[in-house]
Length: 282
Image (cartoon, rainbow, N blue to C red; front, top):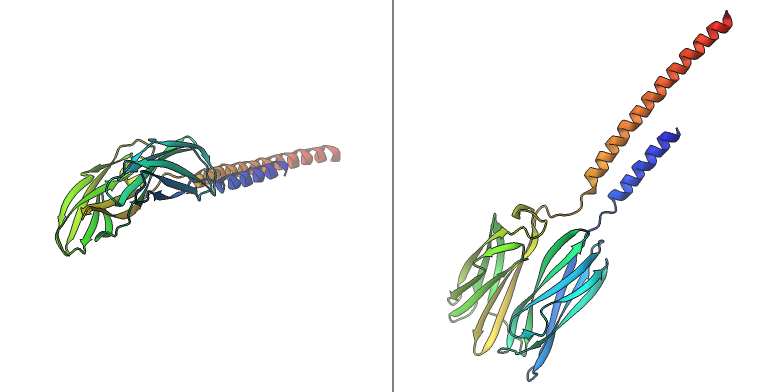
């Protein structure tokens, strides 16, 4: 009976461990301040961890259009669940006023695994502009990502399409220049491949954010728009359940063995008792 209780206690420990799997889930936002007439400004990027795992050794790398940054990266040691941190980068050498595409590459460690994520955003530098060219849909077909683009402009516009993904994802023709005719539609196709920089594996097992920026200049103002697609298929996460099932199976076999052993010993004791009783009767 005591052994059976020990086995049941081990089963409960396995069950508790199965429920304690942790995952880091980051969300991010950015804000730039570079007012008209100013010689410098700043862009701030805030990440929040809404998961139940801890991210460590975090490195944020800014990719800024429309201005230069004073530092190439910033580091932060630890981001616990339900906490946030703001990275700040000084901006200078501003280009023509308008909205620009920006994104931040975040590398962090969860346990022994290194993970890359990309957070895109749009920022106004000295002026806010509204783009007439936008992405009205994005889809994936195997290793191809298709962005459906539409122009509301009444005149032709020479636009640049820029695709962005984590560094472990390769993109063919990540920059495309297209002449958008008035009120026209265009489908841009990007081929993606895995560079296997992280432990993510093949494309079919990737989980990442794929972004497409659209930019153009008109009347000495800069215009940008953004389309974002989150690709998630068999993402690398902790899977404690199979371990739990294996443990339960092993415990079940052990319980059966203990019961069988107990029955065998019981039969043995009964046989000995019968023999002893027979001898006493004589």
